[in-house]
Amino acid sequence: MMMAPAEVDHRPLLLVEDDADVRDAIAATLRDEGYVVAEAENGRLALEWLQRNGDPCLVLLDLWMPVMSGMELRERMVQDPRLAALPLVVVSAAGDGKARAEEMGAIGYLRKPLDLQDLLATVERYC
Image (tube, rainbow, N blue to C red; front, side):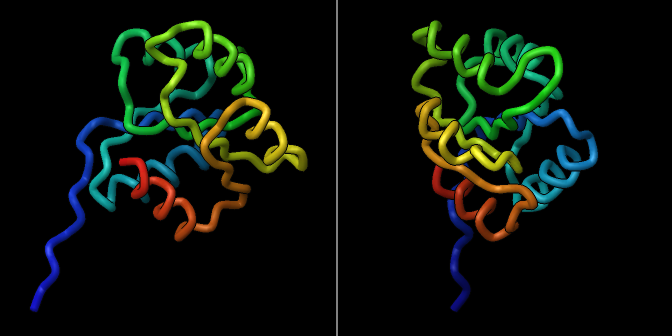
């Protein structure tokens, strides 16, 4: 007997990552699994996307980016009631990434290089 595929939330998830190769690889993996992925290469572009589009099922956020860091983006999100409660997972290679994720009120932390099973399990939980 075949199992029905899990129901996928059709709201996009927002992937915020400055490294184009990493961003492309994560986005391609998630799209292959049926997710809708919006991409931003820095916090400023992510904030603009959020202000225009609103309600992603999840924000996957790198910490260290030019123009506006992940921490600066989170500070701006918290100031906007519409964005403050969005689920946020920090994705970082920084040694203090997990502690920073907790300080930022993130619901999760994924360490780079990413374990694809952990990535997919996290996204499946929220999207």
